[in-house]
Amino acid sequence: MKLSLSLAAAAMLLSMSGAPRAELQPRAGGMVYDTTLDITWLTDMNQARTSGADADGLMTWDAARRWAAELVFGGYSDWRLPTLNPSDTSCDRVTVVPGFPPQHHGGNCTGGELSHLFVADFGNRSGESVFDATGDTAQQRANLALFTNVPNGQLWSGTVYAPDTISAWVFVTRTGSQTWIDRDFVLLQAVAVRPGDVAAVPEPQALALLAAGLAVVGLLQRRRAGA
Image 1 (cartoon, rainbow, N blue to C red):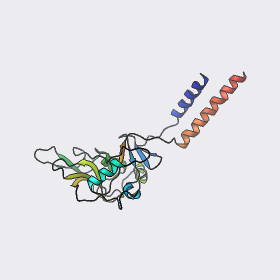
Image 2: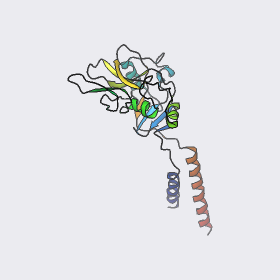
Image 3: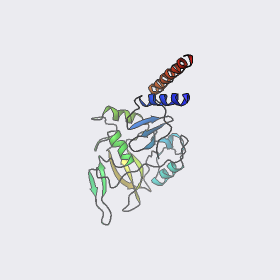
Image 4: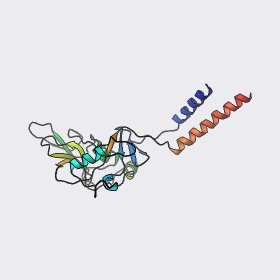
């Protein structure tokens, strides 16, 4: 009973430690958790090259999808390419193909996983490069700094362009926009994402507060035992 009370008190103290509220939270081993979309990113945006899976990390869409699907990283094997949203009404341009829903492209898109990361989290505005920090918040700059090998070009998404199916959606980091491109002949970089969080690493201040709480509980128990 005393042990249960001790653990409960420690848990309460830990809950009061002020856990981080940022949308992107670093995780051990080269991963970042997006608390808004509930997904985990690889921080290396050219992991295929870094790991030696591909000579330069530039792949066709099918090769990129296969690489992500076969990836085992951090003990997880459910990696995939991130999504873009063709119906994203936050985009600043629309293309209409007869017989198909409107295809939203251009800049300022935030409705897909990849576009949300670059536009909302990194501040990649329409018409500017992701590396142009003009107007970006301190948090957006910090978010971008969590990642490595960010391209000033294009990244594959896992979303097919429905009207012709020979193209796939990409995010253009040098212009902050989403569009579609031939998926069979163009070679582009890819980043992997997985659903949910990975094992979180407690922040030092949270660990310190927990240790202090356990010390207080232990002191109270010793006083009661000696009474």
